[in-house]
Each structure stands twice: as C-alpha cells, then as structure tokens.
Length: 448
Image (cartoon, rainbow, N blue to C red; front, side):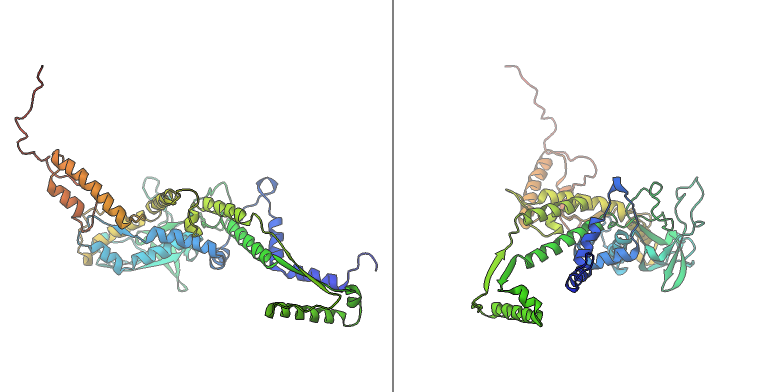
C-alpha cells in the first residue's frame, strides 16, 4: 500500500472520532490559551448565556440558588404594624417580579421593573408624587429589551443624578415605549472595568456583566469531566474474546459480518445467562480498569467551583460536611453573610424606592411622612431546641436588666412580643425606672 493512503476502515474510525462530540469538546479545551499566551476576553452574548442556563444543570442551580436565597425569606418593616405595606407589595406580586428581575440581572447583566403608576401623567414624564392614586402593577424587563440613548442621561453636574439615565426605551411586545426613570426600579449586573476592557463597543456600559461571564467555562469543564467519568465507567470492564485465525477471518469474504454476528451472540449470551458457550479455539477474559483517585479529583473540582462561586459545596452540590465534628455551620454563616450583603447592595435601594412610592399612593392609606425601615428576614433558621435555649438566655439577661433598673418590665414585654413575633432587640423609652426603696440606702464604707 502506498504511503499516505488510508484504508476504508481507518477513514471510518477517523470519521467516527470527528463526529464524537466529546472528542471535539476535548480538542477545544486543548486549544484554550491563557493570559501570557494571547488571552482574549470576549463577551458572551445573551443567546450563549441563555443556552448555558438552560443546558448546564449546575450553572442553572447556581443562579437559582443565589436568587432564591436573596428573595425567599423576604422582608420585615417594623413600622408597618398593620401590615399595610406588605399587603400592598403582595397585591403587586412584588416578590415574584423582584425575583424575575434579579435573575435577569444576574444572567444578562441588568434588568428593569416598570411601576404602572396612576398619577395623571404619561409614562415618559416624572412621577407626580403628590398625586399618586394607585400603583397598579410591576412589570420587569431584561436588559436586552431596554435601550438607553446617549442623549437620555442627566447632564447637570451639580445634581445628584448626574450621569444617570433619565429615560429608558423599552420594547414592550414589539412596541417601543419610553419610561421616565422615576417610574423604574433598576437592577444592574456584575461590575467590570469598563474603560480598561473594551469588550464590546455596542454594549451599553450602564449595565454590568452576567455573573456567568467568568464562570461558564468552569461549569462547562466540570460537565466535561463528568462526561469523561461516565465514559470511563462504561469502559471499566473490558471483555476480551480471543478467536483463532481472526485476521484470516476478516480477510475472507463476509468475514466482518461473521465476526459481528459472533460478537452479538456473545453479548446476548452474557446478558441473559451465566453460561457462556465458546468454541474449542476461543477463550474469554474480562479486564477491569481501576478508577483510583476519581473521588479525590472530583472533590478538588467541587472545592474549586465552590471557591469561585462563593457557595459552599454543601449547598451547590448537596454534599455532607466532611471532617471530624464538621457541621458546615461556619461555611453557611459566611455564605448567608454574603447573601445579606448582596441584598443590601442589589435590591434594598429598589425596595426603598418602591415602598416610598407606595406611601404616597392614596389607596395605600399610608403616611408619606412615616419613615419605613426595610429589614431582610434572616436566612439562618433556628431549630426549636435552639430557639428555646436562646430565649432562656435572653430571659436571664432581661431579669438582670429589670432588677438593676436598666429597663422596665413593660419595655421588655413590648420589645420581645410587641410586633407579633419574638425579638431579641430591646427598645428603651423614657427615663430609667426607679427601683423600690432605692433612695437613701447608700451604705458608706466603714473602717474596722
């Protein structure tokens, strides 16, 4: 055979390898370059990000976890003793719309919630705060549906809103609508150095980046490692059937068909019976492939993903804490502290603006002069045993404060149970209480 020519069998194998998606993916990984060898940052488009979210289960779990944790326990407003604000928010489906907008901002780098306000003005006019009759609806839009014209920014350098958008043009079911910023709640994506990284000239710099921008390749690589593991498992046991004069059989007419038929009969016999029938000149053996160290490797991969996402492995992968006396509480508290920080940065300003707007609505029956403080409910949920222990310790502390005249029993009662739920915070009002017979009982020291 002349050098350079390939048999039909060799070409078939090559074509099969080329058609194998796993092999192609592996080649792509081998072609990646790092920072010192030609690193090139490209911005993943919306379609790519959406396909990652839909097609990569771990990436979807990560996004859903952080969004759910930022929203699921919702908020408390101590000044809202009658629950009017929370009921108004519930009627607006605020929790659902905030969740949708937050997910869109994490995925695509930004989102907007339009407040449908009845105040006698058009959507592109500033809200007439003194003439709000009602807020009828909240509607979220992903960044991809929002356009900010270069001329639509505040340009008065003496004002607090300098450099912020004044108008947003939104594609609403194919129709372009212009909304004034006073009617909008804005959710921005992840920070990135815009001036230093000219990622995409057409990308609106006001928005941020997708949280998956720096993570999606890591998620894909983890999925590739899983594929490789599954393929290794399929090949963990290799059956070897030795057939006499195999090459002569292949060279003969219909030899390949005879061999394929023999292999099929062999596989069928193995699957339905513990008895394997062999010819006098055939022999069989099974070779097992050891998968030593696989668990350790995947453990390291999971630790890397947990570190890059800031999400404990116990949450991201549903694994149990490892190590002596490990309960994962330390990691959970760090994670919940991060979620609380994200809540205060990403959604608290929008909630404050919404609640303030609601307080002016005539149908809310609220006073706009009242200051409503928004508190995020704790993600850390105590067990009943922990609650009993904590309250017992608090009762001892309260008893000491009452006996020493620091607080009044009524203040303790109102602080612990006044808002309809137990609270460890103590609100002190008025002057300090006077203990019975506390006057004129000062004992001077005596010299013995």
